[in-house]
Image (tube, rainbow, N blue to C red):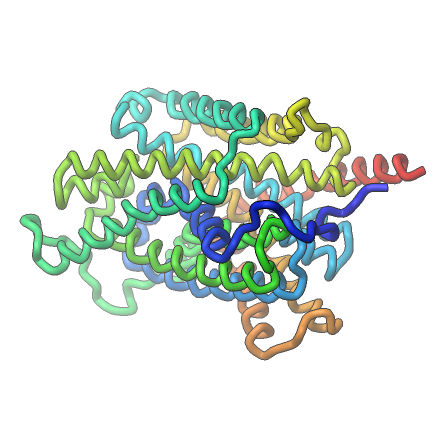
Length: 448
């Protein structure tokens, strides 16, 4: 008989994650290469992009509150999968795990694209040669897949170091923006004129908020490896809220200074907007340094997320809700089949869109990944409401309001993703039904 990994949790591990390690996991997984390319996708929206960030951070805080409450009450491995299983049963829980898995390997295409995009600062041919960025991106994906298949992945201490490396260039951009606005640079600021509420258009805010939600994916990270977290019932909620707030503040100010202090058409056409911003207001050498940090940050995040995209189907296969052959381990005890399967799907996403520019590819993948992940966010918020209704989760007005707001926010952003992304997301979601049927039959056969 198989064991559900969401129910079976180790009592203690040799290297438990404390509060700062868990917070670094949240911030580190949220801040990848994506934020370094995001200003290019948001540039056409101007001041509406700033409003989109504010709404996204508010929605993210509501979602973080939901995850914090659920993790405090059910500190189990599997995070969103565990909560949906507790509230609605195994079949809906599978759909949550399936959508989460899709959002990871689809989203990893954007992480890889963002990292390679910043390499174009040093190797312009990547941006100038049609399709070359897709080839380089796939090369990076398989190199890091091979690393994970040999068992080399970031440990908790390395996560702290890479998180600092991710934050440094963003904090530098915020500081430079403050200097520019304070008139302490040779080049004066050129800020788009703000004429009042007329600059905020609902359609533009909705589109911007959907794009910015991509930057918040990963806020649930501390809930997944619950068995490795020290005192998970208390540590995970605190780390989730703290990590969300830290990343949200950095995102809001760093992206806004780039969007508002550079011409919109220049930012939209840029393959490295943060580097261009620093080059414009400081000097080109500093801009190249920012690009180097961004590329390192992106590849570090990609390595960690590739590990997750392989570990998740492996864990679900061991739990009986994914095909059993994905649970097969290599001689080193690693889920090589799950890693290879996930990276093949990831490669397909990149190659199917090889003709797009890096910004176009990034924008499309962000919308597709976000749409897939929104099902997980929506299901988690609904799980909180259901568990409160049946008395399994302590009822409080604050949690009720946060979960209700999270449901509304998830539905609104699904609408904002647009017809193409929603259609792709729905097709990928329903493609999981035969997978669940096959896994269910295999599990029943194994038990007889």
